[in-house]
Image (cartoon, rainbow, N blue to C red; front, side, top):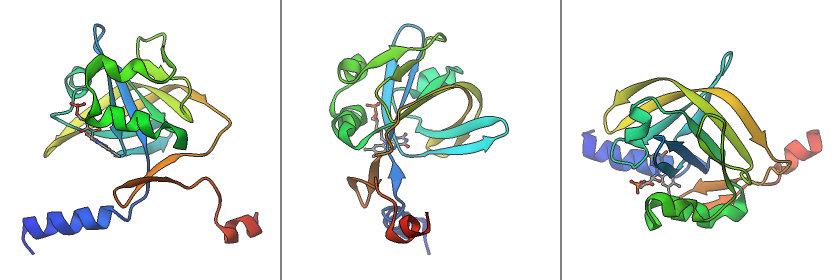
Length: 171
Ligand SMILES: Cc1cc2nc3c(=O)[nH]c(=O)nc-3n(C[C@H](O)[C@H](O)[C@H](O)COP(=O)(O)O)c2cc1C
């Protein structure tokens, strides 16, 4: 199979991979950046760490490439509009016009009304194709009581707030 077919098949396969929607936020000290992202995952609990995959053309990339820390803000289902704003609908500082944005002691913007805001210092990165993988060493976490995540599946926003019936019965 050639790469063109593989790319199309991969995109179809990924439509079946449900991902919680996050906003990655960072700063270069002078400007703030926020970008919707699903290519985010836990890396290890020892040490507490996660990884994010950022397109080299995306607005936060230059700041991240200089080693800036970042926050992974896990969105709630009611924050779909914020995801929309932070995925291209508007640009730059205007993305911080909605939501309760605060600034950490390290100068990183975080969304105080996110389901969880995971603040990281950067602990390495590597380039792969169109993207850079950034490793975040977690330094602080703000978590709300809610577990009603905004989920991206099959090209649309949805949520998975309730456990499945079999898990509910077992629990
Ligand atoms: C649901 C969703 C998930 C996304 N996930 C990622 C991601 O993990 N990495 C990435 O680089 N871009 C991702 N994007 C695209 C960026 O949000 C978007 O390209 C970026 O904000 C636009 O670039 P700009 O910040 O330069 O305007 C995603 C977009 C959407 C709608």
